Length: 154
Image (tube, rainbow, N blue to C red):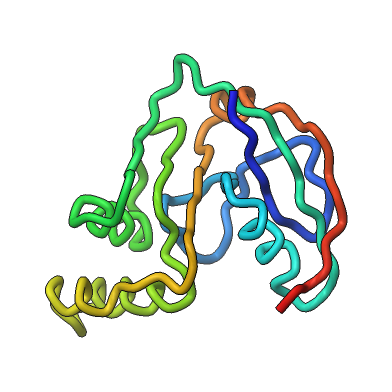
């Protein structure tokens, strides 16, 4: 059993997968993190107080893709997902392309920088982690524990 966090403007007792107008690192899904401070940043990214939702997660019997670190495989997967590709995983876990790395991923995807240039530039400002849920079966393994208000610290 793991504890996961999701930052939002509201309490999310029943997570759902919402298709937005842009593609995320691991495709459409419900995104959480093991890092409570990261969830607090997500919750307050609009400059207003937000909610850090806490879940317990049991990953038994799910089809999970895990990236333990940045790698060519991670980069290729993120580029594919951001350009609209889908995958068959219930859950995908790994590093998150933060605000700085996001731009480098896009430049690589657009052919503006080489793979070598991407790796020379790819440095995180702080630790990142994301775990995304892509199927109803995966969402069913999340149990809402509580939600708590947070305010922007930065």
